[in-house]
Length: 221
Image 1 (cartoon, helix red, strand yellow):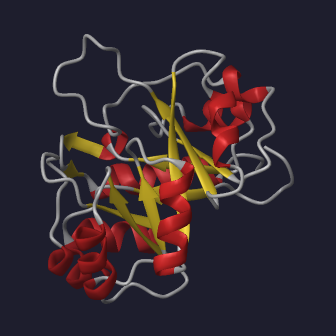
Image 2 (cartoon, rainbow, N blue to C red):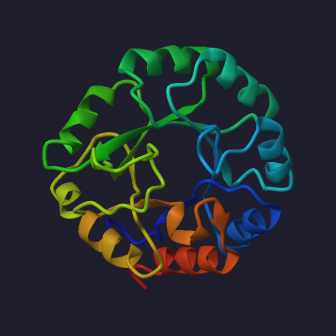
């Protein structure tokens, strides 16, 4: 990891007050709320707003969407007012430019990684995304795979030689046990976790959240 600053950490798919509190108290930099109805981590805009109400403004709220239409995003923007829109579907650069014009917020585009050719695909978003999220690409054989949060790891060295012009975050199967190595190999300055701090899909564990954040932020100590 370049520099001496600790990694920034995003805890994604939060759905209960105690896990939000655990994340904030442990030093999370971003809190992610999933607006994907088929996900076990799904929350309504009203639920997310209630969870985020006590969160200090220094901790950024991230709204996760997959190929959402304007009406769905409008509702979340009005009720939650997130700092970042995380786009985890097949959104094109043109769609990101539309969203930036419409909402004026930070846009994070997820890029699925399986082979050496995949990180290069992020280049098409150079002029439209403010942040990139490199996540593991689910195999075609994986039934009911979600766009993210599947607990899959990819080869972190695929990113080691990449120096995207756009700031980026590492995701995909990260846990308290492997996040230090993931940061060391990939050079990530920010990491994102969902399934790695859960007892079961959608059931976050406050202690696992604390352990993950402590491990991620201890790199370089």
